[in-house]
Image (tube, rainbow, N blue to C red; front, top):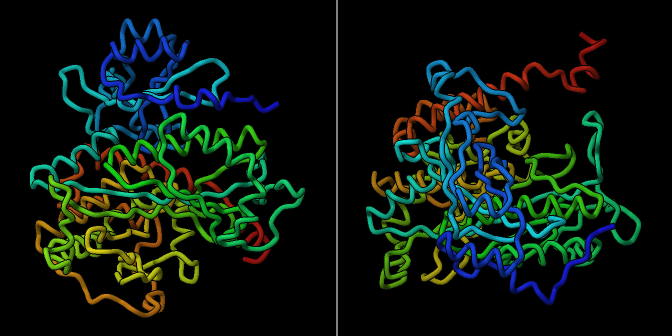
Length: 465
């Protein structure tokens, strides 16, 4: 039976500005917290870490894990370390320090439990460059040196699907409250969202209790495909929220006996799922640097666009990190497959949404929802940064159907990784150690995939070739 939650106490479970161990101790006492999940996002955006009693955490809040946690593939394997990091080094400990600003309840836990995201450091105090949070911090530091403050707002698409315990069978839409699955696409349908009212009520409650700021929920064009928009803000805070939201909706869905998936292309006949990233840059006083005093577009705005156009192919390995991601990047798939930009033109990879000058921004529509939010935001901002500091110029905006221009992005993970590792300006910004680690992990995942024989091959090749 699905657990009941005390909505009257919802407000008291939020983190009220905890910033130190002492404040955390008081917060634990007020919430009667018994356990804490000490988590760190790995390269895939999976929560790794330890669960411990609060009394132990308060005694030693810093924990240790092997460095190899940042070299683990999505299949649980490890690549060859030679040339990147020695096998001995990969098994040495790193130290994880809690970021108390991320302290929150774990609403789906049976016993009173908290969670806190950690940052990773070497024993000598150096940040672990392979850690996704550190990659994003590294990019944000470059912006800070210029007096620039990035603002982002992610939009995350996902599917609700019927439970599927056999990976050989295709996914199916779940049964809603009417007792029937969706049989056709219901884009923007309120009634289609209402089919899962109970699930989304729990989702909103769980999100509130963690301090996740959901702006809107809509039904996307796919069958049982939804989109959540988060409010704009600091890139690191928003990446944390996406990371926590993915955990939340998966847990809520399981409580309702279905799955929530962020696969880029979970069903062959349905649209893929994206993680659109709205981006703007302000100064320290909050003034939008994409608009001048007259409200006109600035050179920095054009440079930011041009940087995204120039470096999108090289960051595709991060924005589309799995072999499945490239099933979404296909002509006539509904997803943008180009590096063009335009005003309110959703066929372009880069869209300038309608807004007043104070809210002028650029939407990167290329990332898929399976991307690590820390890395996708870092890579997108890195591309824009390079465009601004290199004073790049964008192409003319496209006001027609950009899809007729064809696919202008790499079509496979293998092709993307080649562009990624050869792009020296990008490697310098994201960090050579991280880039080497990421490349090794993704190459290993690709090789694992290539050892798998698909149903398509058995169906069409077995008796015909």
